[in-house]
Structure formats: C-alpha cells, structure tokens
Image (cartoon, rainbow, N blue to C red; front, side):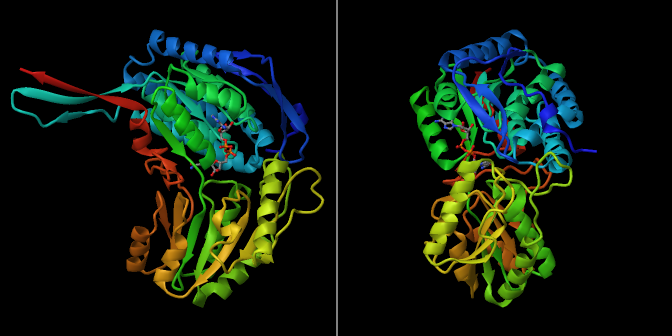
Length: 489
Ligand code: NAD
C-alpha cells in the first residue's frame, strides 16, 4: 500500500546546518502541492548571513572531522550506509511525492532506487580513481595529485529533487569535499530528509548542509561566497549563464552546468516495430509531464513511416489520466505550478497562431481543480522557426516535422541553442552511426530513449545545454583539483 494522506506528513520547514534542523526566520515563501495547488507549507529564505554560517560550518567541518583526509574507503562505507537508508525510508519517498510532481509509485519504483544507486556508484569511486604518474626525465618523478576543493556549492532544480541532489552530493562527498546545497524553492522538503539520513549514516555533522530559499537571495549568496571553491548547478540555461558570470566575478570558480534542452527524436523509415518505437517516443516526452531536461520533444520522422507512427502516438496519448501524486494508482505528473502551466499554454497558443496544428491534446485536463495536468500534445509544425520547435517548453508537448532524406533529417535535428540529447531510431547501423556523428548533442541514444541505470555513463550538454558532466567517473574527477608535482632525485 503506497497511497498516503498528505495532511498527515510533517514537513521539515527550515534549513539543515551542522546536523541540526534550524527553524527559519525572515522572508517566508509559500510552497504549494503541484497535485492540487493547495499550500504544502512554507520555507524561510536563507539570507547572505545564513549562507555564510552554513558555508563556514562546512569549511570547518570538512577539515576538523577528518572527512577530507580519512582513507577514501572509509568515505565509501559511509556513503553505502547512506544509500541503504535512502532506499528504505518511507518518509523520504512521501516527502518527495507530496512536494514534487512525481507520483508515489514512480518515486518508490524509480526515483528512490535511482537516487540510492547513484550514491552507491560514487561510494565505489572513492578509492578507485586517482591521479597520474607522468612520463618525465629518468631522474625525475612527475605526478598529478588530486585533492578535494573544500566546500562545493550545489544548486538543484525542482523536477527531480532527490536524484539531482544525489548527482551533486555523491561525487563531491566521495572525493572528500563538504557540500552546501540549495534545493529549488518549489521543492524544498525531501532534500532536508536526505541530508538528515546522511548524518544518521555516519557523515560528520556539517559536511552536508541544506539552505533554503530562492535563487536571487540564497542561490546568488552561495555562488558568491569566498569559501565556496566550486559550483555545481542544474537548471535553466538563463540561470546557468548568470551563475557562470557570478562564479567568474567572485573568485574565478570552476562551474559544472547542467542546463536545458530541446532534444530531437529522429525516426527513419526502417526504425522497426511501430508499437515499440511509439512507446519510446511517448515516454521520451511525457515522463514527469515533460518536465525533464532530457525530454525528447521534437519528433522528426521520415515520410514513409509518419502516418503509422502518428496514428499510434495519438491513440496512446488519449490513454493518460490525471491523479494526485499521493495515490498509488496515479501515473501521470502534474505541472509543478500555475506559472509552468501558463508557460505551456502560452507556447502552444503562439505555436498555433504561427501555423501549428494540434493533432491531439492541446489543453489542460478538465476537472483537476488547481492541479495543473496538461494533456499529452502533438503539434504538427511546418516551419522550423515555430516557437514550439525553438523554445524549451518543459511540458508534454511534442512537435512533429516530416523529412524525406537523411541529410534533411539531420539538418532538422540540430538546434541553434541546445545540444543536450538526441534519439536516433533506425535498424541500419551505418545510418545510426552517421547520425550519431552528425548531431551535436552531449548524449545520443540509438534505438532507445532515456537514461539507464548505468551510472558510469555521464550526462551533460553541448553549447547552450551546459558545461561539464554529471554522473560517470567524470563527475567524480570534476570534484577534485589536480596539483602537478615534480621531484628530482
Ligand atoms: P531554474 O534555473 O529556474 O532554477 C534552478 C535552481 O537555480 C533553483 O534552485 C533556483 O532557485 C536557482 N537559481 C535561480 N536563480 C539563481 C541565481 N541567480 N543564482 C543562483 N541560483 C539561482 O530552473 P528550474 O525551473 O528549477 O528547472 C528547470 C530547468 O532545469 C530546465 O531548463 C531543465 O532543462 C533544467 N534541467 C537540466 C538538467 C540537466 O541535467 N541538464 C536536469 C534537470 C533540469
């Protein structure tokens, strides 16, 4: 029985600093439940002084507790215990489901195992990857010696609060850093519980701290703090640009930026079984109500298969039903809030004004009160300039463009701003590999769409979709700086 009563869940309202809950004070921000728009609770925004307190505690704790200097295997053991606690904590799953867009069955079956496994992956990295011995003259020894940065500032978005936190904290902590993390002000609660479980698992108090608040006050104070030596951010491209600039002007800090996307799904005539391909395309743009950076929201389909594929997709889109996230039978995510729902409505409306035709969906589900559930929507567009093709909508809206030959398909697949992911569907291996080479994206999936549980595969975008990688060995290595050492003997 996974369903629960949202009124009976106690919400951790404040910050989590030095292993203690701190009731907030100051500017209060209202947090609503995406499922029905009712108030979930509130948070108190950390101002620059509160951020300073959290960062100073992190800096002191990571040095004095021995977290940075202990045998890496010891850090791995703590992270493994943390993952076990995450995997079995009912309260964590309920907080995630109540406060975010994720239905409880999805949280329990996917988000929580995914979060715990990411932490386990980095527990294993702690004593597996090191620096390098470099080829030098015979009477010298050249080495590249990794060391932790100290305090890493992490900032996460609202669409996958727990797994995003695990992608930031896992590599940073495994490498011996402290973390001060600011979750999105729209989904602040579950991350606090996650940090509490870390301390229960044996992480020294103060090595992981959570500060609550919006981007302009709390986020920017964290980025600018002189003791924050690196910033790891996931969110929109506009905010990423701002953070990169702030990090440069406040200490020339390195940044990892995981940003937005507008990813193509390129389907050739020889893609194979229509039902299977339609299922992939559908999941690619409807998962989490389309509120995923990797969402495959541009269908570019070859003419010979287009009618059959669109017919199947329209049929599948009509099967979705809205339902509150705390009901175990719900499968479909609401929009995070009224603002996001309005953004989807506005882009769909401008797309129609500029010639797009609605093939299915195109509006909110009726009778869902203040819960903003948007119907899976297919928009047939002729022009590549249509706003629905150009803008990241962050809703379940798939544009459809038809092509005749491979060169035309590849040209449509590229995007002027984004380069996060791409899906290529064909049984012809030569064509698949040509497409893989031809599309500028940080990830190309061939005959699948979406991440697997293979945490060794990093994720990160090209050009407007970001800088650096989350996941994989690369994210662990990016949480260390490298000292060159030359010894003559
Ligand atoms: P957002 O950029 O509005 O906010 C993200 C986070 O940044 C929030 O915690 C916010 O409070 C904070 N923030 C805002 N302004 C800030 C500032 N000036 N300084 C410091 N922090 C600031 O993004 P969002 O709406 O929360 O999330 C949706 C976006 O995230 C989409 O564009 C999506 O594609 C992207 N995303 C990318 C990935 C990826 O891996 N590439 C994953 C998930 C989401």
